[in-house]
Image (cartoon, rainbow, N blue to C red; front, side, top):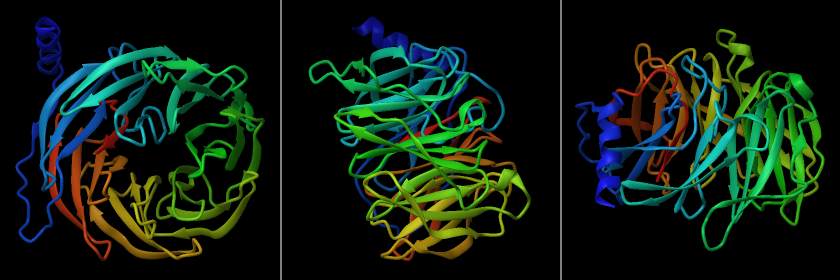
Length: 375
């Protein structure tokens, strides 16, 4: 055990990860519980970098743990996805895609450490996003004929057991270009955004098994990342193909039968390439990362799911930031953003009014990293 521990810590020094930025916490910010932030390296020998997060949001490098698989792609957003690295609902398990080896890995979380429990085939080619609900896990695979494929978490070992009959091709076929897969809040359906066809797919789930998908037109161009607010309202970022100033966010009601109905059609924020989106715990706000303009925009979400722009530039990630992934802590007190352009992580305190205050950050993530999760 001691030898294994030493080898894992040597891995940290072997990967040029994580030099802590010297950004001080501003006075007057509320404190909470400590936790962790995780970033996936997406390198040929894929790994997850762990940061310790103190009660005020400051990050400190902890260690790096191999996934047992391979990453793929280069650039600021190599997988073109949201949800490449996700935590289970109870935050005891962490799931990572291995796009280069067509597999998905599951870790047990414990303090600042991860324990690799399993690495299994993803059920397709180039997995890019993971969804978790109770004991169910689904992966969307982007290459070849894009599909979703499901697993059940073994109750004793937490290993992943493939679900017979759960693999379903995306309605958009080879041109789908999926960005994310996620369960609806009640687990009755899976939702997938298709960047390549400007469609939103739903797959009813019965006894854990996904049924054939149904496709609906997106109200905005290039639907990308999404999250659910209250009452099964899906809030989706519209990247608009990266066109300058064309970023937008849309909201939809997703019914129990999987039907998707537009609530707020694409509401612009004047920014560029809105690709990643998160919704805090109370469901009253939404934040989207605009990769092309290096900014975070904020929206207010009404009780019925309608959107209103709160602040087109709620925060900036700085020159060369290229914000390309976002994660909220479990209590929605802190927001962390992975910046693919310069290998940094930006941190923000979320105020009661939805404002974002820069509090901490880290640097040294390798080029081609993808995915971020926080607790």
